[in-house]
Length: 248
Ligand code: VOV
Image (cartoon, rainbow, N blue to C red; front, side, top):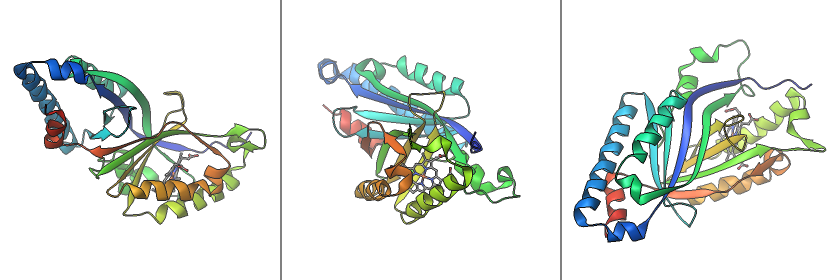
């Protein structure tokens, strides 16, 4: 049996994708729409407070295309907290004008492929910050799930640790060229959702998603060993932008 990579886990993650029932929203009277918007704004403010108190983080983006209208990406200490956020939101007036279209459950994960031998990662403040990150409020988000292949000769899980380390080094080298342009949050989802990882990328220039992902396709880790699910790409929402999007 090959040696399993050791992983460190941080905050649990929920990507909650919703669409808006535009017909119902348009037909609602002004006072109901305004109540719904107030509730939404108070949730956004509550999530900002949680983030300021370092008890979690939330990113809110509109989604381009027909797969969803917007996503809430929440990071919290426990699955119970994620569930509570989801339920509380579902009880709002605003939620009654939305319907869920997709969700993804995972946990922020770092593997030990690049670990310094002999050091305790949990004593390293940079590692802790990566496990419990404040989600960037970059202009754009890109989310997709992925697996590492287990197919005949292309089986990631049968490779020796040293080989995987060397392949991951090459993966990391490509990623490093995008420092300052694309920020990645890798969340593990084995046992939590249908794929093995969620990949969430943040950038101010959305074109950098395409550049990075395309370049990685030529790297062996992705070219030979990765399979991908649906891609979701979108634009940053804040209180003002959300209100503008909902303006009738
Ligand atoms: C934006 C840049 C970027 C950078 C710098 C980067 C670096 C690194 C390092 C150093 C490491 C290993 C240690 C750790 O941190 O866990 C990883 C780990 C991982 N990555 Fe990565 N990755 C990036 C970006 C990046 C992208 C764009 C993708 C999607 C692949 C693609 O083809 O679409 C990805 C995937 C992953 C995954 C699924 C893992 C876990 C693999 C496992 O088997 O455990 N990743 N990644």
